[in-house]
Figure 1 (tube, rainbow, N blue to C red):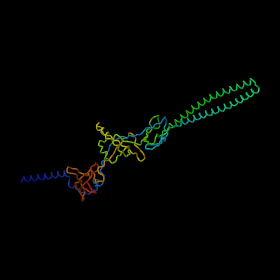
Figure 2: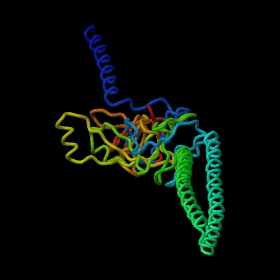
Figure 3: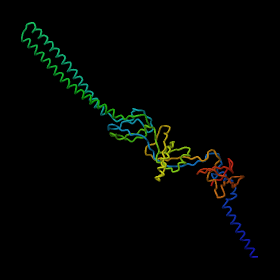
Figure 4: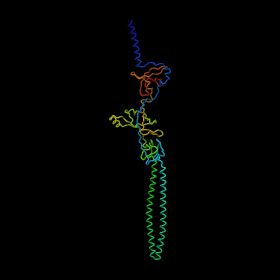
Length: 370
């Protein structure tokens, strides 16, 4: 009698353990009636969509740009451009304060004008004096010819000598005044060139990438950067699985809160071979497209690269955390008549967010999300 009792107890215990093991292996056949649970955030709907994997990498912005600097020092008066602005060759981008220089130029212009007037006055005075001397010489010649007076002839000769001496002195003085005028004009031109140096101009068509200058500028010190080639890159992006990059549908970068579209620049087979031979990571490069307003990221900025690899487009999908994976296969819990029932499915592509369902589930089915 006692043996039968203990045997019955063992059977009950064994049955309970086996039931628990089976439930652990296969998952529970039923969960509590759906009720409100089916209406909460713990459910999802099987839908047609894309199964893709988002990958995040990091890199550094490199801009093929050149720095522009003022040719003279001074206080910055105005800056006419901002990062992202498109500019044309010769366009004034910024200028220095020229108030004091313009005052110097005005004084120099007066000095040049005074010299020009002095030269004109000296020419007029010499011309008048030479004309008078020529009249005296003509009169002396007339008297000498009429009277054959030796003194008259000597007077005419003396007048001629004085006229030649006056012409020589005038020529020498005019040459000195001409040199002085040339020097003053050269100084004036240099001052005007210094005004031109206070204008920072675009050397060619391009896009302003960023400004580095402040309220003052020094000779040769970079004040702003212009991207002439139109190419901005993100470099040093490590990805040792080339097929992941090549299977990606799109590339984007987030830099300083802005999102930019990217285009992958393929590594050559030789570059990949050299990196692998040196046991170095594969470093990829992307070209950046500017924002609609032309904005480009500044050089040296830290960039987050986001790209997606599409595993299955336009397919039936459910959230990946709605799929139970065991050695016996894949299962989802589907709401049917107020309760969730375990349903065997055949899964396809798997990503972090979604899993493709090839068989066992219909579009619109409500599934439990763990």
